[in-house]
Structures are given as C-alpha cells and as structure tokens.
Length: 284
Image (cartoon, rainbow, N blue to C red; front, side, top):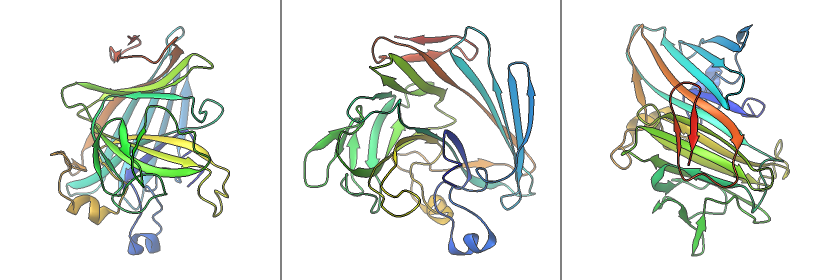
C-alpha cells in the first residue's frame, strides 16, 4: 500500500480503512486500485492503464496525455460499475509530495479552499480534534493556529485536515511552489467532480515500521469525500458544510472525469490558476 501512494494513487471505492469483514475478504486501505495489476498501453504522447477491481466490482481506466511545449498532463479517468445495482462510492485522487521538492518551512501551497475541518478522531499531535476553521489557519493543539500555506518547520509532527473547495468556482486547484527551484506543481479539476481536498502531513512522527520516523510527505488528496473513514461511516455521516461525502454510480454504467496536472516555472506563488480543458494553463 505504501508503494501505491507514492506519487498519485487512486482511492476507489473506499477512502480510508476497510471494515474488519472487508479486511478478511482481502480489501486494503483506500481500496484495491493501488494493488491490482494494470494493463498498460503506450503510444506517442499517451499512456492508457486499465484494471478491474474484483472485490468492488468496478472497472477503471486512466488515460494520460502529453504534448510537446505544454506544461500540462491531461487525465481522463473512467469508472465502470460492473454490478447490477446503483452504488455509493468514494473516489479520491491521492497526490503525494515529497523531498527534495518538499522542504520544511519552505514549500508553499495555494488552493481554492474555503471552510475546513480537522480530522474527527486522533491523528497525530498537531491539530485540535474535530474542529471547524477557515482556510488557511488550522487550530493547534494547546492553542494558536498554524498557517497551512507553508509546509511545517516543526521537528516532528503529523495531522490531517479537510477543505471544501470554493463552491463559487467552476474549477478547483492546488499548487505546490518551491522558492528554491521556482517551480509550480499542481492539479486543476472540475469542482463538481471533486468538491473536497484533504491535506495529510507526515513529518518524521510515525515511529512504527514501515515509517520508522524517516518519512517526510504531504498528501494533497482531492475527491468526493472529506475524510478518510470506513464505508459505513462515509455513507452514514451527515453532509459537511452542506456537501455530501460520496457519489453515486448507476448500475452497469460508466462515469468519466477529466482533470490535469502541471509543472511550470513561476517566480512567485500564483494568485489564481485556470485551465482551458486542453493544453493551455494560465497562472496569475
């Protein structure tokens, strides 16, 4: 599973822990998509990956497209419900940023966040538990706030927060910017597809294997669910800030989303990012 969350992992059809019964059936954290075998087809500028999730009874396809002289990687992702019943599912794009691009007290993050909340149970030692706040100032355990726009410079810390993407915008995005390399890396997507973004931080805090106190990372996890949690909790919870925490996929149907990743030169953190749906990206 840890190898699966390096880079960009698809969490499908759960986002979080499986139940005891699901574990006994073979389901893993965040679902099967990070551990199944994929069929890969590569052509000029295009990579298509396909897999079937036997426990979830879902088929998944992800097509990546590149074009010379464009900073954009275009994603077209399709999920097919192979069962004969309508299904509530989690669907989260788990993007993980690490060193050397990620630097403590240096790397900056920009996103279209509005209302936010800390994790609803114990998760590390950084934030107050189950507390609402406005982006970017997260409530700290013991008092005060933490500005989430700059990666932590604490010797050791861990935590998770969730953020509602601005409902006034058609597109949502996040950007990670390095003042050292003057590079901006991020994603842009339709806000209606993925209304939530979770930020997971691991800063040399987890001592148990395989972490062993050696991991520095920030997960930027955009999807249909605010929190990683069990399937029953995902379905049973009340909407957060008036927004549901899962989506439906009809029986014997396919659902497609389109979004992009980008990497481009930037002298400063952008104030805004827009994508034309093709190969053009604008940073302001």
